[in-house]
Image (cartoon, rainbow, N blue to C red; front, side, top):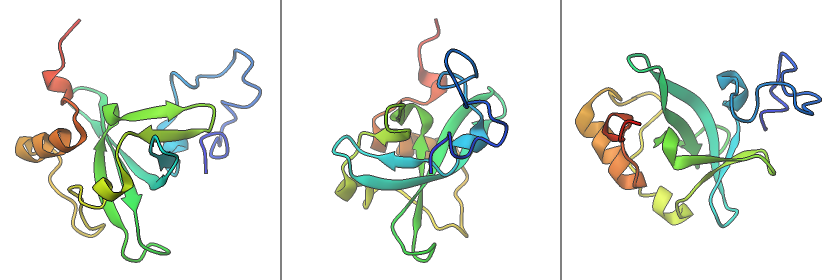
Length: 139
């Protein structure tokens, strides 16, 4: 399901220059969006968006991958800056091979990691080839 279908308040309807998207979007409309890779392979969908309350920035999208009807699915914290919004197809793109994602650091829906732990964050950013926001050069 894409953000236009999840648009409870009608902020994306009849856009023609109005509304906030795609540069500024409601977080609730993004939960449930599909994530594909650059080959067009379905990698899953966004289950949650994690905000860093200290900086006010989006840190991670929690991606669900695998399983059937919620059984056996694995969750992955994907750095927000590893995702690109594909407005033409109304989905996100994550530049990772599907086979590689199967080996990515993930977690069970009943046992979430401590996402504020810096060593955990470095492992995640290292896997996806991104930098934590705190390491990005300031403009």
